[in-house]
Image (tube, rainbow, N blue to C red; front, side, top):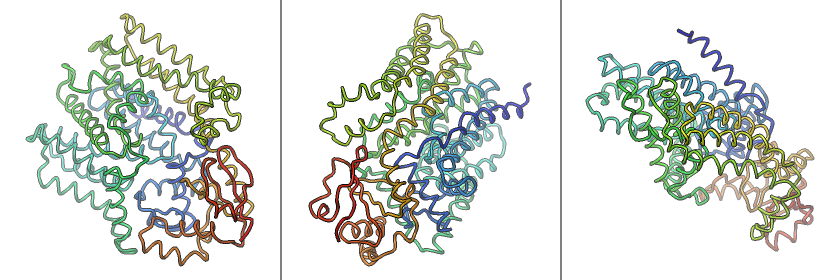
Length: 567
């Protein structure tokens, strides 16, 4: 038998090489990445670790755990992109080790390895561990909580006492809620309720175990809530839960998407994992017995709960269905494991969805860099004539050379050849596809995403950094951005000034970030002791009153820089 310690060592080493290098090679993306990193930076600046802030005002959209992780990394490695993304890289290392342990314990060593390959070799999951958003850590805690419910049910069937599992389930649920909010409890609760409905005799924990889970949950969540309420009252907590309701009801217009949005996300971005999970989405394979069958029942329940829940909710962002990637990876791993152990044969019909999901992705990655080359952009930019901002964003800079699509082309062609062999009955083991896409994910993170970031926001952030270094005040007008705060290295004193009375009025009216909004309004209407600049999108008209006091200084890509010239 192979040494578990040595396997975990090599998984850890591979994860480090996969997720950690080059984390800071490109800037953080607006909004989410910069939003969370700025909150962490403000924790360090103010020394206030009890609540999340933006513009040095209470920011109730997110609880503090992930922000604490980022702030600790920034304390060690400095305020930079590497530190902001490091918590997710660590989560990736932990996640792959957890997935192997779960797979090995309940099915077998090679199945555990296939789960690691399926997750790390599916496109979006691997890229997410190199980001600075909350969801990788959030998903890990939810999975660990539900996994403890599975182990508890298994132990109950085997006449064992599962109290410790319910204690861990509550603890991980509490950590998940502290990471992103009460939606974690909703997901975990729905999975538990569905299992109880399906098999009440073995899934119902009993009121004593429910109390144990709730006790450990409240110890984790209650510690933060208690400290917050003791120091600041209930205002922050009320606003936090009110915002969760807004998200759930879909009252944020730019987040609203059609009901099938997450189906498309999973199908096209979780390749090839989604394709090889298809045969296991609705029922267990006949050879699954005992705890392996129970494990897949839980995985399937997680998948459908998340997909249905976030398809029904009007507010839809790509991150919301990312928890589905975990059960999809286990299911895809079983296809590889079944082939390896001669228990299962990949159906030839899977070649059809495989081609449908891979070919559009290949066209984007192969043709995209060529079309973005300066020689070709101007030839098709006229298609965006109705959107002046998008057109100028497209025509900015000379980031793409065209060769960037060569490696994706070769990897996609190799994948297509394998799929055609599958259709003809010659291909068997799909693990080679996951290796191709694992390499593709690394290539995208090194050569595609940095250039995309540069194309989208380089001109804006360069201008923010330059003017901030000169001691000027820069504000955005007509669009939302957190880059002005993070890359402008904002300080608490920047938000104290003659606009404070107006800030109190806005606060009384229930405005979000009242001091930040009051400062922006005041600087647009009044002279100030420091140079004041506003940045607008190129298609935004700031109004005649604004133009009387501000002069257009220059056009920076798809943005216009305005400087106050008269009081």
